[in-house]
Image (cartoon, rainbow, N blue to C red; front, side):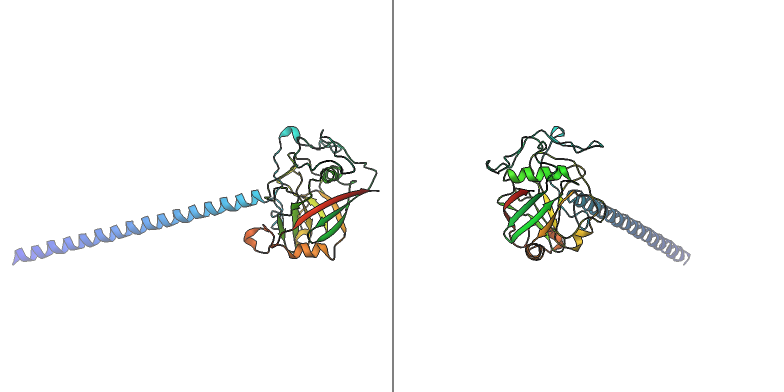
Length: 279
């Protein structure tokens, strides 16, 4: 009888020990699962942060600020015109024929030298698949950008090119002969930034990929979202004709899917020709 009692006690102790061991094992398993879940969450958070940062780095001109894409035309230090605290420093490239009689050129070794008369007013007529825009260029505030634009026009640089990006109520971006968003003339030049609040509907400004990286890509503000951009993009012209016709038509063709960042527009937007007059 005594032996049976001791056996039962031993079995009870073993049962309790087994139960305690199983409970301990379950706790360890739960802790491991919890640690693993936390690790996975941290990894996902890091990946999301990296993607967000990468996206912002690549689109340096607008969601309001960071969605205007960059003008990524390749350039080296020797081909970059720079502002050194004084007047705009021009490049050494040759000027295109004033009458536009030369062949089309879409790649250059260096930024152009001063090719315009800064005492004159320059007006561009940008003919697009949606109609014409007349733009008065501001050589007083942005002589470098206007000189660059005029020389590219005289080189027929923009003729036949596609505006690769458009976002309704924001802007239309043009000036990349490759229509990829990464093309440019082969050089970059310095910023001539406006004061805050100077952007208006119909403003022409240079797209960029950071400070002093303007090339050939430009955008036209088509709506109120563009007006609120911070002054990080050289403002060099203003639409004076076509504000009620061509500009709304360009805006309407924009891609409103947020996932696309405006690329491509809902329908092809093409610059057929740009002409320059001076007075």
